[in-house]
Image (tube, rainbow, N blue to C red):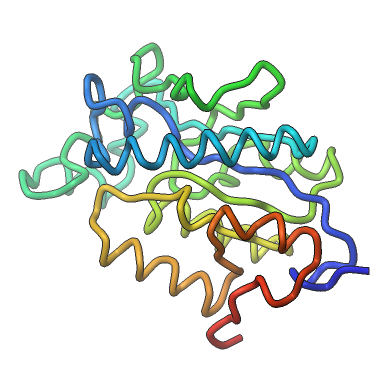
Length: 221
């Protein structure tokens, strides 16, 4: 019986957040991650997701897509950020409109067996999507979280997962942010303090195989 992630028996799924061209392809990205960081992230995630599939762990891509700019501008912070030339979110009103190339998952990360949830409209992947249904229908109780941005969508989804009583494990080398390393580190610290666990992808399989020394200690409860 395993209790390393707080559950008696681990039933994992990989939840891959916004690993699309709108963040990761410099040719079309409207809110880009720095190109060298994007390349590193895609390669790390490619290896990690390949291992997940080899272990029959479901891979679920959650993708942001908007019908029009009005759906984006309904958020007061984003509406304001769009007017700030110094904001990393200044392109938000053009970001991932349905039919744009940004809505496409990076091809290196896709497999025909993967599941896609494409109704995400806000940072929290559970909000107004069928992600929770998709996970529970497959008996999932543990989320292996990858994606963009560490300090917004990844953090928000991890806090929501905690509130929904999932065990959440953020894969440190499979997340990144366009907001810089300080906010990346701060978001991971917030996760460890109150919402779940973090680990490098190389250590995930030791954790799932129930080797307690592999899991970093949480910072508080």
